[in-house]
Each structure stands twice: as structure tokens, then as C-alpha cells.
Length: 470
Image 1 (cartoon, rainbow, N blue to C red):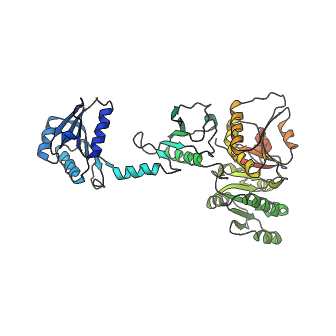
Image 2 (spheres, rainbow, N blue to C red):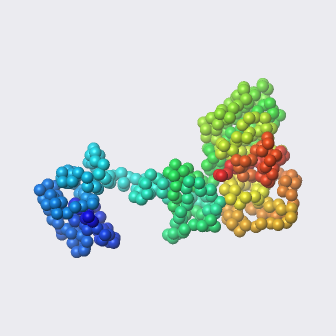
Image 3 (cartoon, rainbow, N blue to C red):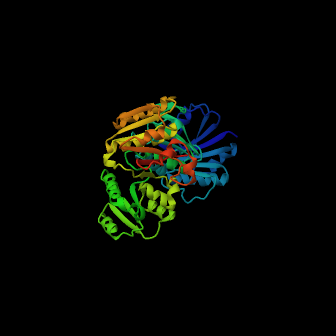
């Protein structure tokens, strides 16, 4: 039974039948019912045209008696006629699959598990919606049609631009193809994503939605995609002497953005004089919250969610005394740890070369920070034995971003112990990839001996920790 019945009338049916004629679909025989055969090309070998009025049950029964159909298409632009044909089909066959064109929700109230009504208005509206900027385009006619296949355009300032496939963790999703300059690229680990590429993604729908937002998030919307605003956590028990300095430094960052807010959470405000000074900083963009008891992890998490926090500012001393200090990775935020040098006096942002995938993942944020502060960025590699392991991919990536952001990049290789070398660096901001296994104190801080973990122990340098995907 390889017959398909098409009840055709109107321009859409003409276009559809032309498509059938162009495609090689001769596996099936097509019986086309129309009131005027002259409207169609009747010379197609695997199509048979029959002139009759399909709204007549008597005439339709003659056709359906002779042939059995796997599917019936009702493509009629007059909805009253379309529904009459549908009801006639159901009199003759209760279970044959019917695909019906629906121009004005005429089939909305028809309850039939064997009916597929094609709502033209919704399809056109969805297609128009796909052309809006920053809207994910998902597959409509293949797969499960649940959003598990998605196409995403890469903006020029995307955090995914100029990254190699190997540097992007793909858990429960994959980049299966790249469209560039009207050409299909099947990516390998060495393929670099470029602005204006169209990525074809496959994965769990919920995961793809998150990936879409990350790709579309522009690196110059700092601190997005981690969040929108800034959060300063002060503990007066340990930060009293420098509390005002910390606030001034947070405001220094805030003043570089027009649409951000700063929330200051003051813990243990037991110094009346300092508390009064802090209150004077409150304004339309600065919110001050007091906690007279130690803040719990749950309260901190609530603050980060309620105020859409992307960057947490905190001191080394605060990290060491509060219970949440080993849980910051779970929040997936940027973390700025105060050092001896204020941001206004920083002369260089420094990355110590380590895992290449992590270096690519933090690169966009690193360059944007350097660009915002108008300082150079240094990629430093220290090897006591002088065995430098140059990577073409990572150097290509950083050199490309250097031109994009107009930031001077210094690549430095020295035969030194990395921790001792960093100790003598002056006026630098250390940019460190933040992993789950890294800790600021406790037993983990003594077990982990990798360079990034050891950098967390240095107290004199300001540090920006960037959470990475693991």
C-alpha cells in the first residue's frame, strides 16, 4: 500500500505538488483529486489526477473504494470545503492519517489522534519570530521537535568567538556543524569558532537554551554571562580598617558601567562610626544591607539571585573566617579578591599559563578587563627546567583576541619557579581559572599543589577568579 491521496485546491496545493514533482519521491503513487486538472501538470509519471468534487461523499467513496491510502492530504484554501472533505474521509476510514491545511484555526476543536492540522498562521508567525535578533532557531520538521536541534549565530563580541572546539566543554550537547561563508564545516577539536559563524547544536533542550544564552552573551557586557551586577561582602570584624577603601574600589568598578548596580552586604556591623560612614554611600545605584548575625550560605545565595549578581568582591580575611568560603565555586560567579594594590593603580593583568582549555575559557573576560582598565595583558609561562611547551592553538587564540580588543598582549617565558616569580610582580591583577577542587583554606588548600591553587594563597596580589565549566 504505497498510495497517497491529495485533495488539492488553491495556490498552496499547486506549490506543494510542484515540490513533489521536483523531488525524487517516486517511492509512492500520488492520487490527486481536484476540480480542475488543468491547474496542474498532469504529465508527472507517479501522479494520477482525477477531476471530481471531493465534498461529495458519493464521489469520494468511488476513489477510496478502489485504492487504500497510507496518508491523506487535504490542501484546500476554503476551510468549509476542507472540513467537509475531512468528515467525508472519516466516514470512509476512521484511522487513516490525515494531514490538513488549516488557515484560520478551523480544525482547532477537532479531536482526532490521527489528524495533523498544519496551522499556517502559527507557522508563519514562528518563522518571522526566528528572524528576530537573539532568538534561538530550532528544528521544526526533524527530530523530536522539542528544541533538541538548534542553530545559533555567533555575535562578534561573543565569549565563544575565536575559541577552539577543544576548549569548550560539551556535556549533554554537541557542536555538530558550522556554517561559514555559505560552506559547511564539520568541526574537529582544532577548529576555531569565528564571529558570524552559524553553529548547529544538538543536545538536551534545556541545556541548549543555556548554551544559546552563553553564545549570545557579549563579552563586553561584563560581568555577564555570570550575572548583571556587583556585590561587595564586608565583615566588619575583619574588614574594619579597609572597609571604606574596599567600597571606594567597588565604586571605581561600578563607575565604568552605566547600567549596573552595587549591593553591599555588611556583616557584623558592630562599629557604629564605620557603619554610619558606609550608610552615606547609599544611592540609586548602591544598595546597602546589614546583617547583625553571621551570614549563612543560603542567605548569600539568596542575595546573589535576588540582585542578579555577576561579580563578588571580597577580602582574603573575609574568605578565611566565613563558612561559605569553600562554596563560592558552586555560585558560578566572578570573584574579585582584594590585594595590596588598588585597581586604579594596576598596570597589568596577568595570566599564568596552565591548562589550555581553561585559558581559552577565561580569555574573553581577561581581555575585557584589560580593555576596561586600559592596561596590558600578560600571558606568562614559568618552567624551572626551561622546557616550555608552546601551543599554537592557545597563542593563536590570544593573539587574535588581542587585535579584536585592541589590548597589548605580552607573552613571557622564564626559567623560574612560578610562585616565587609571581611573588615579585608588582601592580598586577592575577586572573585565575577557578575550579571546583580549588580552596582558599582548609585541607584542600594544602593538598592541591597546582599553580592556580597555590596562587590563591598569595595575599598581596589582587585576583580575579573566573569559574570554569568542568
